[in-house]
Length: 108
Image 1 (cartoon, rainbow, N blue to C red):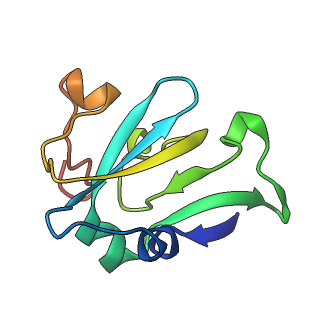
Image 2 (cartoon, helix red, strand yellow; image 1 turned 90 degrees about the horizontal axis):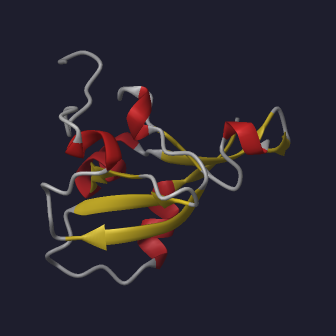
């Protein structure tokens, strides 16, 4: 997948000192979040290409979160908006339904 660093987008944003969470919103109403420090430390990416071709719609065009150490529900597709928040307990679609907000593959 062609990749664009999420961190680059975060660096270009004006970040309040209280921000600790990045919320990803998708065109279909889906949302999920990741800790800002996790994105910084792990260099989480937004994919916009696959095999050097614009990301196909079924794979998440225009952007898809790539968070390799997280379960798939953190890999938001069709990302159209990114919000920086001070709510570390933000719950997206699956998290509101009881899924772990951490979504760590190695520590389920």
